[in-house]
Length: 420
Image 1 (cartoon, rainbow, N blue to C red):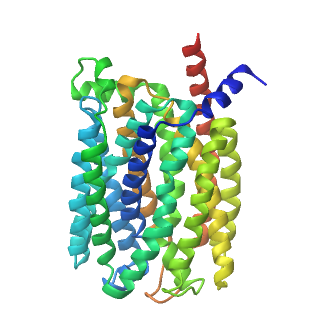
Image 2: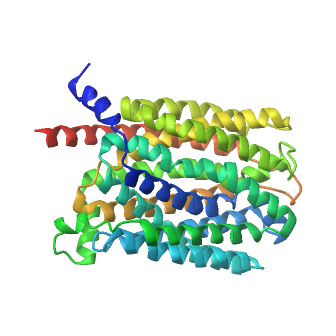
Image 3: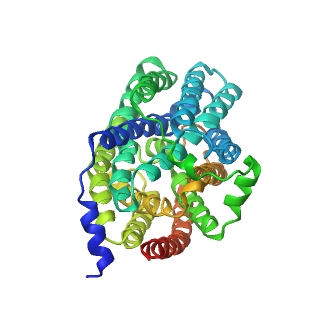
């Protein structure tokens, strides 16, 4: 076995300190609240479309509004993302995110909903990149698979706890109530960040005296960085296409009831809570790209099968969602861990901001594009052309495999140069 793989396995076994465990926990909870705010739009989709009398294209734009504003925010903050204490940046944007989420609960029309989602995106879209920069500063690449496995559990936890509870209270008190729930959870997390998280300032010691614009242009100008940006953007396009209309497809095509939806999200989310830490450990022990490629091929097969389903029993829909979640989550952890190995320390904040920005913009384009493909004759009829999205996702995923392979080669070369 090559020496570098032996070193990777040895370092991957080193336990985390109590403070490192707290950092992982608090960032995972932060991700949970931000992801929940975005994810809850999907299961509430059918309810929102009927309540506000929205067409699929309009609902797709309401999802895209968050993504586009988050992308613009990421680009605007990239230039100064490395010039401040990351803890202060995290708090600033997280408090803005809380205000935006609460404003969503106050929206009673389509224009107000769009405006609220834009505000939420402006603040919420930057939080993930700041979290990634903190992780990259505090953990070496041989531990990041495990760390990302736990951080990405926020995705699963949002489905296990947040989405079912959100749907439950939405069925009782209306679609606005889940946003109030997210705002309350986030407020508690903000207090913990303020009191317990230590300043993250090591990157300030190696900063060069560039202006905000020059730092942004310097980061974008690097070829290796651009390859990382492209791979992230394509992964996002593939991931965002099905998501906005998943609940509407389940209800109108598969004939799942509004009250059965929480069970689907809870079971598939629980499976991801089991899968994510396991995939994190595997990605620290074995080649991250190989793991990503296998997961991508698995996901492509399941997506094509799922998007061609018609009326289906609940148990079979749950199985398909578990299998699909396995593929999606198993490619997310190794790809994100690889991407964090691209930027140099002075550029990490800017790189993560731009990367997150492109991720959000690409997701917004995907949601809007999906809204143009999917057709619904009336608000109770089946969605048409949903299967077309499956084929588009397969094509995008094949290109993603090639780009992530290039990222993998770059990261390995960089690690070898550092050893020398």
